[in-house]
Length: 371
Image 1 (cartoon, rainbow, N blue to C red):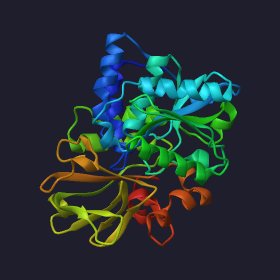
Image 2 (tube, rainbow, N blue to C red):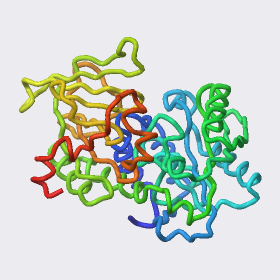
Image 3 (spheres, one colour):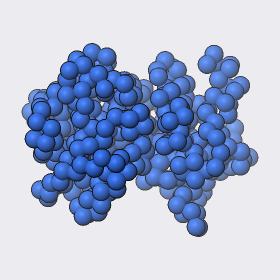
Image 4 (cartoon, rainbow, N blue to C red):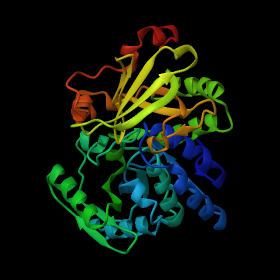
């Protein structure tokens, strides 16, 4: 990608970030207007560093939103929260932060680091710690592959600040969640401070440019053309080639009794008119069934495009009667290792079976497409 982000990049970046959210990650458009206004007013641009060009001796840190994106909408951030979190972190580690990276490569948590980078002038690394959206902070490749999680700086829009340091990962994350409750459900995070070499060992590279490229394919295109372009882009990436899983009308969306999961049920249209489709949701889309047969599972991405417009939508925009296409995207290999699946695999979401990748669930499609 270009080594800068400008105001014209924000719309396609938002579109791509929603697709990577696997139904979650928050509504990126809520923050995109704030970001566009800031870049336009200040004639700003954001420097983006390809991960392999980052100097090994740089001090880097992650920045992002924690908590409920929906609650964030009640008091929109302006980026100053992230600035304060960075300053608090820098004081504790006694080093200046040379570059930032996104905690989560989807939804609001792609856009918020761009906003903070624009305000601070600190460059942004092209990569993140999840490659998609996940519901919990410890579901990052940095936790999975043993990078230190502490200290963490937390702030909110009302001026509160906390610095947390616990040697035990899960105790650390527990106390972050406890602090978020005290904040009213939303906070802004700076942490995972490390040097450039350590970051390169765990980051999922290129996700910012990947989201931007996918968003450009989705911009002003109807579904079929958008999907064809997505097939090409995803096939030539660290992800895998996108697959159409279903097209249908939402007939039911609600909670499943006794389970943490929600359920979205579709009735097929077009070539799927005699079929049904069900997606099980825990913040993000976790499992998908076509006529009661498993066709996709976490950590692969299960996302929705409005049909026939081809615009990506998240789960908060689902309602009965809406027509959508369901798209699967194989996740990067960093999320498919034994260590990763112990943290973000099907068993974490209550499904007691081994992970089956999209390529294994749909062998004919991927064989015929040379994958």
